[in-house]
Structures are given as C-alpha cells and as structure tokens.
Length: 118
Image 1 (cartoon, rainbow, N blue to C red):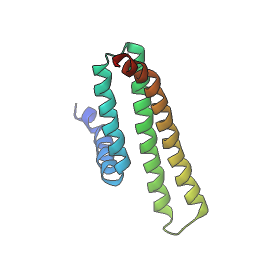
Image 2 (cartoon, rainbow, N blue to C red; image 1 turned 180 degrees about the horizontal axis):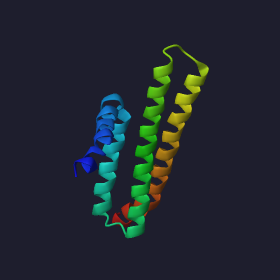
Image 3 (spheres, rainbow, N blue to C red; image 1 turned 90 degrees about the vertical axis):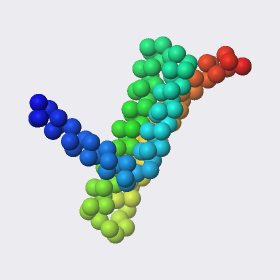
C-alpha cells in the first residue's frame, strides 16, 4: 500500500511547486472552481459537464506544461537567446489557445442558460 501512495508524492510536490512559481495556475484553479460551482447551479447535463471538465483540464495541463518548459529553458540559460524566447512564447500561446477554447465552450454552454434567467 505504501508503494501506491508513494506514486502520488512527486505530483503533489509538483502541485506545490507550480503554486509557488506560477500565479496564473492559481488563477486558473480559481476560475475552474467558479465554473464548477456555476455548473452545479445551472444543473448541466452529462454532455455539458464533459465539455466543461475537458476544457478545465486542458487549460490546467497546458499551464503545467508551460511552466515546465519555462523551468527547462531557465535551467539551460540565464542569457537572452532567441530560441529560448521562442520556446517560452509558444508554450504561452498553448495556454492562451486552451483558455480561448475554454471561454468559447463556456459561452456556448452558459450563455443560453443566463439568457433564460432574464
């Protein structure tokens, strides 16, 4: 049983590491919590829940990968290098694209529900 719990040691350390380094990850977590609460309030159906959860996790995963790329680039160079900049910029773009996708999914799912209230 101890081997089972040891498998979670490194991911938990990774969570604390990213929470210390990256305020964006904390922001994404807070937004995810708000969206999950709204999902309960609006009583999403199973398919809507699936899209919302997929969007949330894609944003979180891309943010983790972005931070990992930043760590790797920073490990190899403290000096400005155009390839290091490109690596960081394109990783940040992945997070932006995932966030845009999540916003579009949110609009498609939540806007009609909000309009029904008014």
